Length: 215
Length: 73
Image (cartoon, rainbow over all chains, first blue to last red; front, side, top):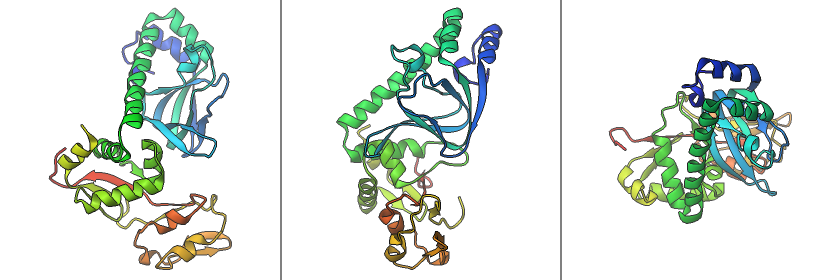
């Protein structure tokens, strides 16, 4: 439990209290962990692997909201909001382990332990900042700028093994469709900003890409 | 990442429609017992046409996103 970033600074008794109400679950690559609208689904904290959190429309088009890494939680709003329905869906990216805590238990832990309540508040505040930035990106930036931001951010990733993306996954992340991603990548390659290798998208002119990204 | 990347096939998603077989300019893909296979992997140019035509997302091409050597960000 102490290895989880949100709870790293908790006192031993609070950690023990959390340990008593949590359970470990394992998920295979691609396995659905959470479905939007689930009533009383628990809260999750990623221990190992990664989790893609997303919303989808009736046509099946998806918007990835965030990729969660170890230490990050999901479905926390359901524990504290007026409705306990899960606000989004989530699927494992690679073999994944998560700690699961029932919503009622999490609420009670937050009520009994101010340090837990503050840790959760900080976590939710960080997520709110992320979603605020995402709202700006999706509503006020062009697809080209969003793709440039995504490429710059991913090129700084230090995950081992490195994360690999399909054009469809990139599209779900930046709020467009696969064909637009493919077309925009080709255009950036023609402009000399990128080099499209067999299995790599290589940034050859980061200054130009930053200008396109409006950063 | 292997030295030479190849399309990733998801046989469970495949509907055996055959679109990728006819679209691939190099004839890399084939159906064997209703399942997609890379029959001529060495001929694959990773062009992405198979991925683009597949209506079932049964073919996917993966990419790493990296900076060119010596180009600081």
